[in-house]
Image (cartoon, rainbow, N blue to C red):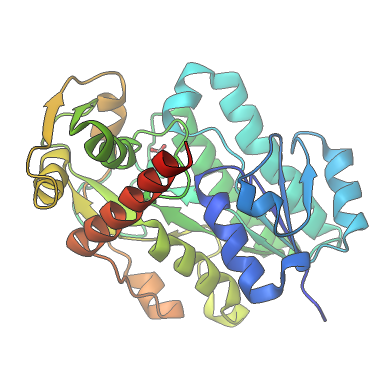
Length: 322
Ligand code: AKB
């Protein structure tokens, strides 16, 4: 049977890359992008797009029926920093969107769901280094609380209704195609843009704040590998730890300086420092490795090289076209 995939949140940082990757595998017309606002030029011109607010359960149901959707990747969410500024919307959007999609599977309209969780499910009482899959979880941000609640709902729907839902606890994601929107780890993307454009960057975290991160190419591959694994291999239905690479602003700026020696970083912490301080510094993803064969490819050096190369090209093309 032909899979038909709906990506909710195709204009965001992950959606921008995931839609294109899935269209290459499943065919352009079998991957329907959707968002409240238009997606990238590449997405809008390579396959179907539906304008949709995921809070509108009726509209979601009608789009699922119209396209005979079999799988949903639910990427729409308010991230850690933005959700702290609007706690009602953060909680409402993050929880209601998940419950709408879980119910579509519960009542047999779709077969499989991907839903991203985050390292934000951990909190200040969690062991900071090599944080294990099963540990103390007392998140103290709205985003973290919503992700932990979502994980519990996933497992519940799997146990009670056999809903095939799969999830990853993403670290901070770094890519050159889409920009992140409202997270605490956003600095690790902004730093590349500012280094290439202005040779300087003011970081909103302290120089020694070490956080788990991952290059987008690895994150997209992890997502697709998880979704394409046989169901019996997926032993964890809440969400899998995903380690990535851990570094501080100072360490990434040293790596960038190897390509842009004049680059200068300064530090002025804001409210996001407190969020970062509550998260792990590094993650243990043993279960993902064992259960479905996960293996990371990009380390800090390889990622920095690829980011600088691609972003420099992007900015040069922009200047030529201007
Ligand atoms: C954020 O910073 O809020 C996100 C995340 C780690 O989930 N990038």
